[in-house]
Image (tube, rainbow, N blue to C red; front, side):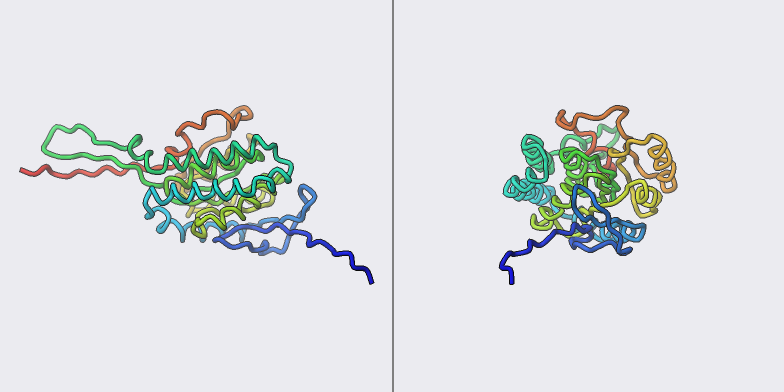
Length: 273
């Protein structure tokens, strides 16, 4: 009898509602020499249900608390840095991704001061505008790990929840990030990650009537991007179209991806006499 140990081969699963289920269809595929779950339409619906259930608690948390949790993600990612490098990611990209979580964590309690404000009015009133999250945001993520972080972090830091579809051929960094998120005090359902073929699942996400916005950063087929935008028009979703050329995710991210998924609430209040 041989004493040689057989290593446990990892099966990469979906991340829905803080849990790691297999696809309800039972399907899988090989990507990056690993067995990965192939998400279905039903998985998209389940992920949206989880994201919607998490909106109230996450958007109702204080901005400071959300910032603490994003910073905790950076801490946990730092601790697993070598694991991500072991997936074939450049060390510099992993470091940039960690720093990007920290950067967005810092914006959590500042974006309302920059994007909101008091408005001048001709009358005895205070008129105040403050940003609020849009709700559930669908993401078609780019294959770059830094790109993945650069679309998830700005969507959730302001109180939105997300359903993210990973790149078909490079899903391992995304599902490994899910393991980081699951141990970072992030409430279940705030981020949901589906592996598989976005060409199959993105149309269901774009057309879903309980999704409020969608970011098409990872769509490279302009015909698909157009069809997804048309599907999103069914309930007037906000849409970020893919860049005309391959973006450099190392560039200064700016505020666009945070402010794109914010609604402005304006309140009038009479001044005291």
